[in-house]
Amino acid sequence: MNRRLSLLAAATCLALAAGPAWAATDVTGPQGLLKGQVPDNLPALKRVAIANFFVQYVTEFGIEMKSGNIVWTTKWEQPPADQLTAGANALYARLVSELKAAGVEVVEPDQVAGLPALAELKGFAKASPAEVRDPTLKKASLLVAARDLPVVMAPVPDQKVPAYFTKPLEGTPERTLVGWEPQSKEWLAGGNIEVGKLVPIYFGQAKIGKELNATVLNVRLTIPLVDMGAGKTLGGLAGGGDVFESPKAQAAVKGNPRFVEGGTVFAFAQAGGNPGHRHAVALQKPVAIAGLGLGIQVADIDPDKKSTARGGGLFGLLGQATGAGSTAADFLVSIKPDGFGEALAGSAAPIFKELAQILANPR
Image (tube, rainbow, N blue to C red):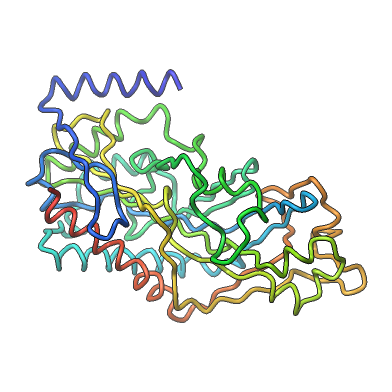
């Protein structure tokens, strides 16, 4: 942590010496979906260059039930990598469409891709798709870039929220599940920030902004496709041995795919700006994803033992957790490839529209 602060302090001093350090303007979207800060150099927000755009697909999620300290894990039967990339590209295209519709100029992606400064940033980036695991939170993700852009996490950190804010699913008893608060407040583990690379990353972004005479836009969209809501039925079955009988189990849990608060972030960098100011706006409430061909099944059920591939099922794991990276799961989520990108892009449209409104009229 000290090293990170030192690097940011050094970057700030260099920025102050190089040019003006733009202060921040507080902004809230007209529908209240987005809130945060944008640079005070407001005219520069009318022209943006997208230099970092990735989707965090949460592919594994562990949930603990209040009753009996029971833990179950849900996993996504992942489609091919090209389908995930196609989803990210569809989201990118919809963002550009909404920005242009609001009168925000978007630098052509070929111009951004051809910059030496972007090539330098790629040297600090993770290769897409990048797998990120967090055993403590029982979570695993794939970070997938759009349009061959770098996956650089530092400019788009989690925006912490101090309260229990993401309910698993409408109608789920709030006290049924525990351990949800740390999961929802930190979608991307803090240890994955590029400590030691902050100065070249932030100055590289400032260089891109200067070369293109534009505000650099960094985008991170977090989608937990494996996030499950536990209905009252499952809560009532917490002490019974028939929870793994397929009809009851499938009736008791529901998929809850959505863009999540904290993890869905849009961050800005400007030439001459202060790297110590992390200008960003973040999603304030979840936005559901509709139109997915979503399927949920109990994993490898053994009807005699009432157990799953994990061995012993929920009731054989009292007080324990499989942890991200385990090969076993209780529930498997599948998504049909047809219409995948369209469903993501269509559901994200209100978020992108609100961002466009903020940039077109930030005051």
